[in-house]
Image (cartoon, rainbow, N blue to C red; front, side):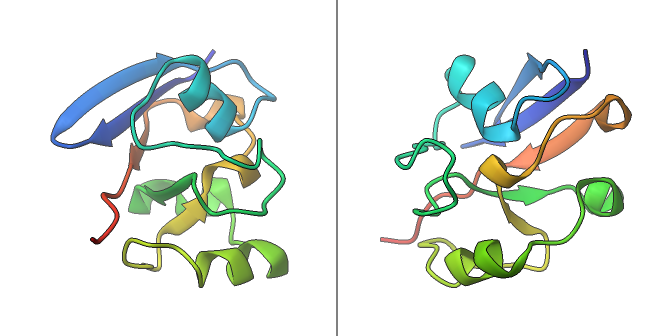
Length: 106
């Protein structure tokens, strides 16, 4: 079970995430702040926007067409490492994945 490190508001929360669940599901199950997941993982709201650590970009892949369109609507800055957590499935090679949860701009 890979350990994922969510960084939010200056705090780091380690989460043991079962393989096969989405990054969003792992965050919600463990009460990670800033992951609203309003659409429940349907790639329809962008409330699970995260920044993936650079060293893990190849392992998590690039956003698909629908995800990329949703990322155009995020409240926080869209970066090259922006992803929707609902679109990333946990795999064994994601041990020590670093995930930043952005603070939405006012």
